[in-house]
Structure formats: structure tokens, C-alpha cells
Image (tube, rainbow over all chains, first blue to last red; front, top):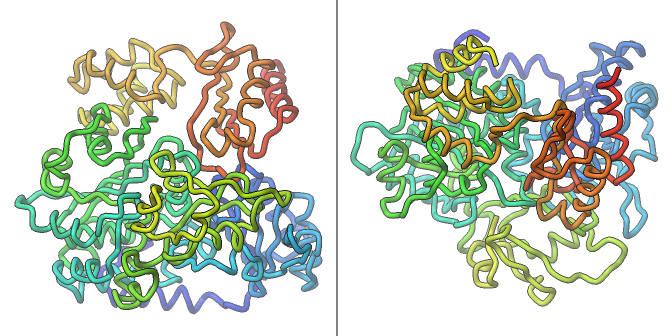
Length: 446
Length: 155
């Protein structure tokens, strides 16, 4: 891609990409996150390429390998657009029929549809499946629309628009103000107000400052950050760039745990594409703002999820924690002011900037705004990734979205927040997912 | 391991001491483990004392200072996999390969490790063999995957 040197050029490119895309054209998407790799999306993708050729539909049908759709237990997930017919647990042997019956004939293949384990009812469209119907996917939404290896796909869903708005319409103070007004709280668990944290780093004395993404998601059972990073690394990168502009940093680091090779691979491609397009580097889009970013892989140390350990690890040292204060906002990476946020927090930033604080604060509860992604795993019917507005009750997540306990067994307890969180028994099922409510119940977010 | 290859990796990171962990990760992904000659070279080129390299390579779980087998088996024993039968998978792995977690057999066929979470929690128990993910595995399938591995090697 040629270097884009102004917002006008970026818009022109976006228009060109959109003009070449017909929303009514048939398109097959195949979920290709880590979980779908484990259930065998590669053989399905190979079979698709072969069958499309054999049945002569190449060119008439688009094929896109997307990030995680979230309904991981039912993978590989294949969706046929524009109708949105959703097939689950697809195998290579099913592909020939999918092309001939659904793609060419417009017929639905009943046996590949979702069946509600409680009612026995089938669902044809993705949005009809109870697992998806009760979610609000503001951050995860683009995952199923874009190929994480394609900058063009991200631009087609308004990608990098928040960056343009930030660099050309807002001052750093205004960006911090917007994040403060949105009352966005850190998604890593502690729930510290992100805008306030950004302000500390912005006001900290010093020329050299850093921004860091914490993708050392170590809590067993949790994989929200992995799916965002694998499926939509662009949003994290865009959020990071906005944060860098706001606090006055020109260098960023993304720390990804070693157990997430696909996240590293997709992120690396997203960075290369952004560099090539002039969205990273010097004088981004002609704004005068410079920013470079490096990916740093972890090496298998659970403690590195803690921010001071992570920063030590970034410096090439053992990931051992430091006492705080001083906080990273004043003395972080190499002793310089550093703003570190988790993946999901950064991925929320483009949304906050694009839609504004009012939109964001309209979702959620008094003290916790926006949505939160949870990984719903263990002994529950529908396992996978769930994104709900803050304030949704645990009961709704487990029973409405999760479909309850398999085999009609009695519910015993739910653990939230990983090992540092807590186990909540049945009488606390009406607890809302909200930073303060969960803490009050003795558990935590995350 | 070829010294030239090590130098290439170090040069890619501009011989910066802060890139120590990244350099070691890349050497290990080439060679499967970290031999002493490699560490000595890294120590010289990055001007980092061997004592610190020893600290780093023993602090981070990924690094191995002993030879690894041709096939690497990782069994996830995180909470979600644990409740869904990770122990049975580990037992099967030991039965088929004769290797306990953290060990490698003398013929360097298999290395077995437990990992705490692979982030495929909806598919537990999960096992990774030579980078390939196997979700919802049962003991019978585990045995088959490992036997196929052993066979492909004999051919």
C-alpha cells in the first residue's frame, strides 16, 4: 500500500475500498482464532478454497478468514453472508455441500445449525442464537467482519477514523478529557479510571514518555485479550496511538505473552501494514505526530501481568515487581513516565473517541460504563466469549447467554476475576457485573 | 548451534542488552533449547554478564537449559482444563511416551510440559503437540496423536 499522507487521502482510500465492496455479494467467513484452530479450521479453509474452484464460484463469492467469533466450543464457525446463515462445528467434509446447497442454491443445511440444548429449537442466523442475542458486542463486533491480516478490512469498518479525529481535531488535553468523561475504567481487573491515569502520565515531568499494552493475560480461564488481539489488532494499535498522542509519547510497546503465538503474528502484520501505509512512523498523516511501536514477547512468567513486573521484563530483566509508589505514570519504563493499560481498555479507546463520552456513559451502571468481555467457561452449556453491558447480572450471563448448567444439574458457584477473584454461590447470582458490585460481593472483575 | 545464526539474531536486535529476552526466545525457537555456547556468545555480544543470563533463563519458564525432544507436548492444566480432565490427558501422555511433565526421554523423542493456560478454555482439555492445538481431547485421541507422531518419525 502506498503511503497515506493526509486525512483526505485516507478518506479517499476508504471510499475506494467501500466502492469495491458490494454488501449484497455472497461472502463466506470462517472463524480462525486459536480456539477454531484447535477445532480444525485449517482443513476447512483448504477444502473451501478447493471446492470454490471446483464448483466454479471463485470471484462470485468472497472468502474471508476472520478473528474469533466467541462461540468457541461450537467452532469452527462458518457464516454465509449476506443472509448471515451460521454453521457450527463445520468439517472439511461439509464444505462441498455448503457451496452447492447454500452458496449456489440458497438452501439452509439443517444439520449444521445451532440447536438449543434446552428447547431443541434450531437457529439459522448468528443473531438468532441465544448466546449472541443477549450480548452487546461493541468491542468484539468487528472481529467477525474483518480479516485480522487486512488493513483494508479495518478501514472498511471505519478503522483509524478515531486516530484522524484525535490528531486533527482534538488537543491532547481534550483527548484525556474525553476518556475521563467517558468514565472508562481499566479492564485489567483493578478498574482504575483510565482518563485519570492518562492525566498523571501526561502531567508527569519529562520529555521521553512511553505507552504500553499489557497483553500478558495469565489468569487461567480468561482469553478475552487474546481474542481481541488476534481478531482485531488494529483497534488496540489505534487506541495505543491515541493514548500516545494524549500523554505525549512517541514510543510504544506491546507485551504479549509467549503462549499467544497467533496474537503476536497478527499484531506484527497489523504493525507492518500501518508502517507501510504511513499510519505509524514519522509525521503520521501529515499531522506532525511521530509514533513507533515494538512487540515484546513474554517468556512464561505469570507475574508479568502485574505492571511493574511487566515493565522490568520489557527492559530485559527478570519480571519481578517493584514497590509502588512510584507508579509507572511517573517512573515507569527506563524510569520514564509510562502509561500502561490492558488490551481491552486500549480497544475501547477508538469507540470512545468516535462515538463520544455521552454515548459511552449511556451504557452500563452508575460506576462502571460501557461493556465488558468475559470468557464464559467451565460447566456451562454455551462456552465462549461474551460481551455484555456493565450491570448485566451473573444470572443472565450464565443462564440466558450460557444456557445454564449442562444436564440440568444444580448450579453451585461461579468464579469471576480469575485466581485473585472469588467464587460466588447461587444466592449471589443476581450480582451485577460492575467493578464495585463484584468487589462488594468479595470477587472481582476480569 | 551455528554461531552465525546466533549473531544474525543478535544483530536483528541491534545488540541491545534490553533485547536479551527476545534474543533468547529466538535462539530457543531455532534450537529448541539454550546450549551453553549460545549463552556465552549472547553474553559477549550483548555485554551482559553470564550471572544475569542465568537469572533470566531460570526465572522465565519458557527457557530450557537442557536438550528438548523432537516432539514437544504441552498439556494445559489451567483451571478450565483441570475441571475438564487435564489429569487424565497427562496420565495418558506419560503412559504413551514414558515421559513425565518437565522431562525429556533419553532418545530425545518427546518433551512433555504442563502449561497454565493456552486461552482456549472453551475447548478444555487442550493439548498442543508441535505447535498444533488439539481441543476437547480424550485419552484415546491423545494416545493416537502421540503414536502418529512417533510413527511419522520412524518413516
